[in-house]
Image 1: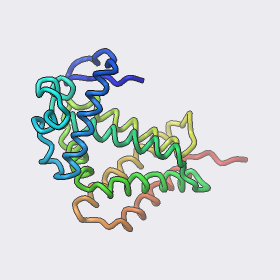
Image 2 (image 1 turned 45 degrees about the vertical axis):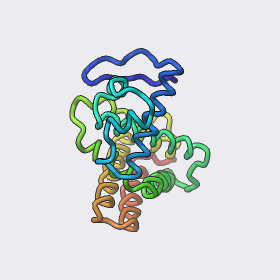
Image 3 (image 1 turned 60 degrees about the horizontal axis):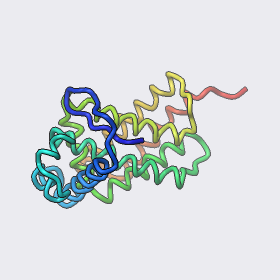
Length: 206
């Protein structure tokens, strides 16, 4: 599926051509590289444009602001994680164990790039209504990763509610770890605890 550029406050643009998609990939790669080296403050739109070999005006047509760009960068990182997880699915016996393993693998991937993780989480935190479509896409991507780990195609409303709570906990755990207020061990305990909600929402077999 070809990506779409969604300007702030406007309708989705037509699907990108192959050349436009390649340009978008370069922009996201440059954003991730700059964030990995220096965090949120290192991602400056002019430097991103120079690093990706696009005009500054072109960059703003793809991403109206730095926040839009970094949230899109998080979406891109989650897509890569999802692909890797599908190639090597979690091995837990229960849905709760598989989701906990999946989220901890995703967490450790972010742990390897703490500056990038911090930049993306800050962007999500700072995002206003103009970035809602991009933030919603990140949420849908996270939901898809969790549902894949659960092995569910048609979740019940109760299961979707549990997934939302798990997402909130994972995001909060990431923030507390990035701010130095939680250890990896504590994050693991919290993730495993909240994933038990899955067992509570899964119908028992007769």
